[in-house]
Image: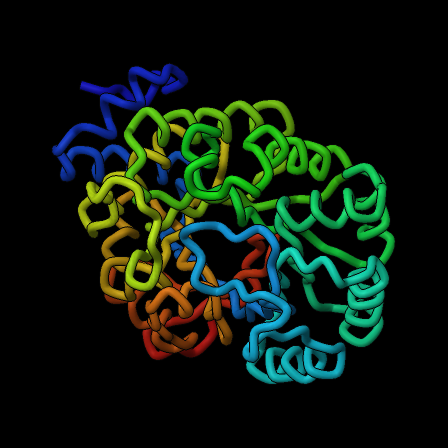
Length: 359
């Protein structure tokens, strides 16, 4: 039987767990690992946030993406600052603390679009966490403007960026990436962006999207690469795994997709066990729905994610789960935990009793 004192840093060990069907035992072990990180806390946290996708024009053309458009498509767009400002005001009115900015790789956007956007947001919303630009976007913007990753990140820091989301990781295995996203950055470049950001003092999240038809060795490789970088930098605040949504996407890959609730809970639990150096594991109610996300709180997760006042990428694939703060609080409490609103750095800023009143 697996011992919690034994570190999982060998691919064969991780594969063995991923191929196990003993979901109950994996959940038990993952929950015990969660308690090692949070021994005196029965809290499950969440953040009030909004995901603003500033453009859907993208040259990457990932085979699994239903969101991207060409610049000549009738439904393509680029959001101007006033539109983003209006969306951000709505976020603040809802008690939000985090604005997530992600968009397509748009060849027509100058560097000033990004720098002015950050500067204007920081000026007008000084207390807001700007969680912006995935590694794919950062590499694209840097290369387009003949800048190094470090130079671009330093510029973004000077303009007011707070942290970086872990989007675009999918599976950090080039064998899979070349089939899914032949134009997207390699796993090495994704990791380089994160390492550079961490060295500059920027915290980031890390993610994994699975269920494309990959095998367990690919998932194990992904988890161990995240573990290794975290050992080196300590810059990841959280890990968020979620399943590929195939409804409106055509990958041409294996139909043996690992994206059932069983697969999700098992992979989440193994992620908690392998990533023994990342304090927070986040559920994915956006792809799994609220009820499976609630169950995931007993499989090693300690964070419910964001309210996501706006989400467009997963929605474009045909998944339209929605929620609000009260609904998240209710699901957390009915799972036997205390609910707490957090900020981007996972600091608790408000706790909730059974009647939703702060105490």
